[in-house]
Image (cartoon, rainbow, N blue to C red; front, side, top):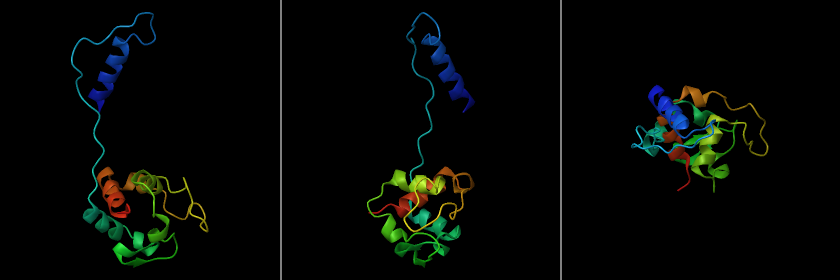
Length: 127
């Protein structure tokens, strides 16, 4: 990560940002940003069950019938993977009708690895 930051800074300086001249890079681009983790729905089901999501949410594919949180069979219909990810990592971004903010734990974005989040998203994304 440090190397990528240095490369970005170096490119910024080469481009003349903040100065009067504009200079184009002359060499190949070195390094790349890490790609987003690709989700595995089977692994996502395990994460969903292991973290207790089914204790609060009804979701048929998980065999869960919780009622503290929204029924995922209903509220996820037509939703994108990006929406689902945001709902996990920032659960107060959009609250389902009939529910209050701060009911869902706020820490899944830091408690779960990016791969675990991608797996849960793959499991929850409507087919």
